[in-house]
Length: 219
Image (cartoon, rainbow, N blue to C red; front, side, top):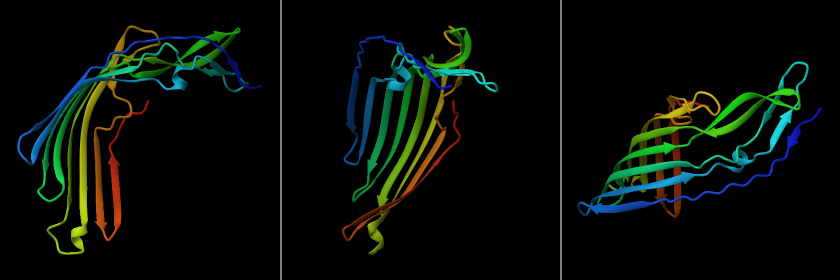
């Protein structure tokens, strides 16, 4: 018994308007801000859009299963607000604080339900767009070479970055249901840390980095 695939031929079209605006504000020679607002989209990948249904027939010990994309998926839309405050050290390096906010609509969500195909019941998984969500957070970063130290230590430097993120999303309670429940964002960790030791000297450039990602929810 092998996999069975049903062929489907469909076409869709869409039009998107993505306005954006940005500005740089120089508070002083060393202090500045970047401000931006805009709308972006993320299109589903080909697998999520592929309408062909692949079926695995049932066996004695397991029910039939199947999977297909959804050609009627909409892009995930995001309205973005960003603001930074950046300080640049006199010789080299910088420190910055960034704030961001995202209003998101249409995260992809997989649903599995029973479907009767050819008189046989299959557990079929298909993606759908979910409801609205919000992503917000703050970031602190600093980078500096140790030019105040004697050689060869002045060729070394350090970089540190910390990000805090919070957010939630409306999730359908059932396939094609108009009802939603609020859940944490999938794949988004509340806290992220990055630290790196830098070296630039004698024609050599090196970087030793470590990253730590906090807990997050998987779908």
